[in-house]
Length: 484
Ligand SMILES: *Cc1c(COP(=O)(O)O)cnc(C)c1O
Image 1 (tube, rainbow, N blue to C red):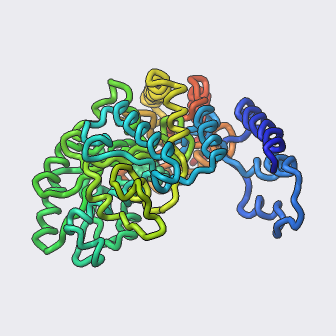
Image 2: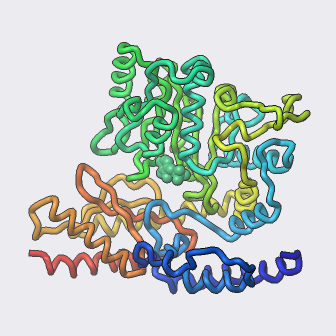
Image 3: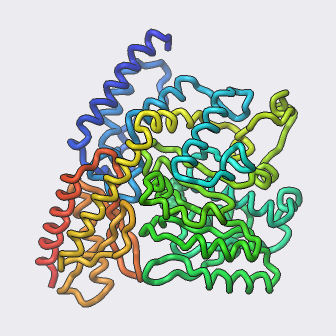
């Protein structure tokens, strides 16, 4: 494709995306296709002869679009709405246009140095302590996801806990990782990858009301495990759990970690970015004093399209100790002088995309005040919705909803069996999701199915939340009449 052909098709693509965004409400939020339907509509074998790019665009519209779930739809309330925005899309496009692979500083100095600037900017925006900055002993790095961030944090923690033995000799004793029942599954995945096994994951109790980790039980488990010869490698505290946005008490957990010399990772994948607003700075309580590493995902709530997760560490020594390997073919003068950052040593893969461009575009386009406005809009809409739910006798609200997520349970007075009621709740969710105007997901609280409505898409306005709530009430009432 020549630069002139690229210009022509590139304009078509930008127009396609702009039309898509302008008309996004005309699509059903959740794709309604059956498994295999899209695949069957595509040729089984690749073309022998090249085709015009228009064919790709027309198949995108006709074949693929029905199989797309529209994450940027204002009625997308599932999981955490993965954010995207114009500047992020354009920043990502520029990254593709440059085609840079930034594994080493020398493979594109600007890729590394812009990343350093942007992660330091974000640290400043969310009020992370000085020691997480690149000019101090720590520093930040953009990862693909929070799952990678917690794996990398665990590898650094293991390095420190083992005095470097794990990197040299492998797992030489029983190392343990501490989570709660509310911790994201990526921590267990990290433990399996790192060789601790699921058996190395110790589950600390939570307060049944707030679902926050119990630091006293953490202290007990640590003492018990150490007495049994295990080496505690890392504790993961979550600020804003995936299920309900519960917030673990980081200061109290941090105190226990300090007593025992255990690495504290703070997983704030969704909630961390909210600390850009002064009224949500409390989310960082204890991070400055106690955290060894901290991660948040701009792709979850900061208008940056997937993928973009940022990991900071207070001391990059163990991280580099765990992951640096310098084969001959990567040697270069800049690296050997030690005067540059090579982010390949801060992540699992060698190669890396120029993700800093999209985060830089987002922060510059919105400015701190624009980012705050987005975050506040979501929290305000969620609080308003929670008020409506609390006032409705047909529903039960989960009272903790500090951010953009509201969890609630429809009541089914005709059904006295909990399992039947849970099935009715799931049926209600399926009906709502099949309607095309919204997408909700569920979780379980105290064994009961609960619906989650996360306000987070850039396009979501008050009227969308209002409409969703009206429809939820209406469908609930309609379904209730069919119950015994
Ligand atoms: C979403 C989430 C993760 C995983 O995020 P990915 O970036 O998709 O890997 C981890 N922890 C928490 C608390 C999350 O909400």
